[in-house]
Length: 166
Image 1 (cartoon, helix red, strand yellow):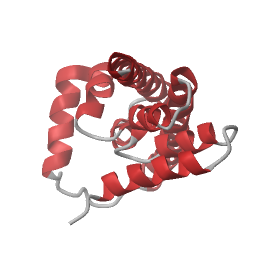
Image 2 (cartoon, one colour; image 1 turned 180 degrees about the horizontal axis):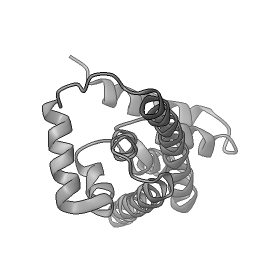
Image 3 (cartoon, one colour; image 1 turned 45 degrees about the horizontal axis):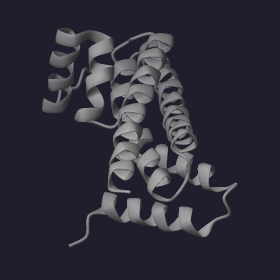
């Protein structure tokens, strides 16, 4: 049985290899917008595909952040619409929601943003933060910081591994 994320990664790697050099960073940015691939996975795809590590990291992080920004802005509008019109009866919290709330109260926005990519895609974390009422600027700042840090870390590791192997 194939893994959908592995299939997506392989598809992006094939696509990067098939398009002209000028278009390759755009493919990496597109990969960065995909949950579970994120900026760090997209950077790895680009580097392995032969793109300069800095260009791959910037493209992957930019694609990831653009997607997160869209999710945050849409979530903000939905939250505003629900809170101004009245959301109706409260739904019981799911186990995942309770787990998020517990982590949020323990680590705050910075901690959840920086540690979140170890557990959930940044898009999910950003939506959850915004859904709990964290200001848009705060969510975008900390999610952007996390995306840059994780993408840089993975880029350095992949570049180091390739250099050591070569």
